[in-house]
Amino acid sequence: MKRYQDRWGRIFVLPAVLFFSVFSFYPILNAFWTSLFKKQILSLAPPEFVGFSNYAYLLQSSDFWNSIRATVVFTLGTFLTLLVVSLLLAALVHGIKKGGRLLQMAYYSPAVLSSVVAATIWLLIFDPRGLANQFLNTVMNSPGVDHQWFSNPVMVQIATMLVYFWKYIGYFVIVVLAGMSSIPSSLYEAAKIDGASPWQSYWRITFPLLKPTIVLVSIMSMLQCLKTFSTQYLFTQSGAPQSPINVITLNIYNTGIRDHRIGRASAMSIILLVIMITLTYIQFKASKTDEVTY
View 1: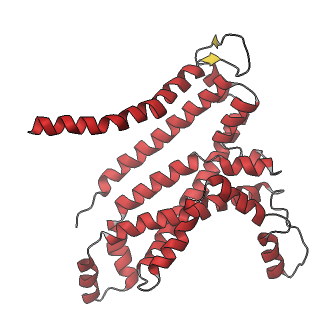
View 2: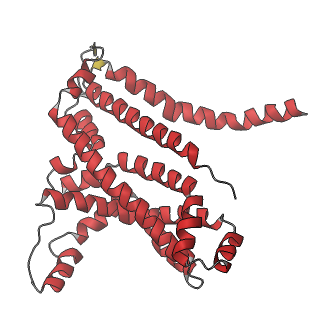
View 3: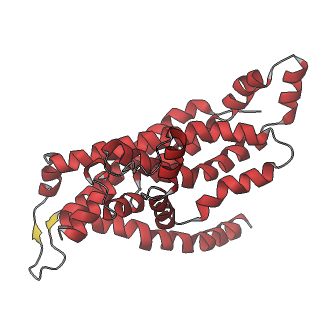
């Protein structure tokens, strides 16, 4: 009977394995193979095998290291903000008895939008006649002033972080709320009987028991930030300076599609993959000591 069940288990898993192999594993192998060649998209000449020369070039390229810096700034700025604010908002919503569901829907609604739509909405907000200028001019009593959000490199970086924060904060709030809901209410009742304040209950009960959820949110938000592309691409196409927001994914696109250097772009893709796998592995190793029991 067990062998019969195992056989059906393999049959049901097979479509997912095939799907992953065709659409994920094969492209990774193909990208690595392409990265070993000097290859241009529109060239009729056969690709030239160059080994790891593309990787050596990237490690000596100031443009590539600028992309690393831009990616680190964007990832840290967005990832840390998402993590902290999602914990705070989840605690706030969790304590609301009436209207909590409505707040969850309101927070989550931007997550259903595509990244292109979200970036376009914020492009309209940062327009000279948009809400951002109107709000600042009202607060500062400076009617008609164009604050030129895209002329300042720091403001451009903050603007791209805002787009991602607005789009994904609701999703991670829901994930944290799911973790909070799994904590037995008897623990809070016992703490209340012992005279613990709401803050003490959160810090001594909720936060320690949420560590697995926090690790999950950290990994998901970090990987999502590392994969960012649409926002930076649309912002640069709308006149924003490219250097401050030239993340690795945008550099991959420009190198492969604009400059036709598909081998070099593939090498950058593999480096990004290695970075993502390494960071995920480190977080998983660090989380092994954070297993909790109720």
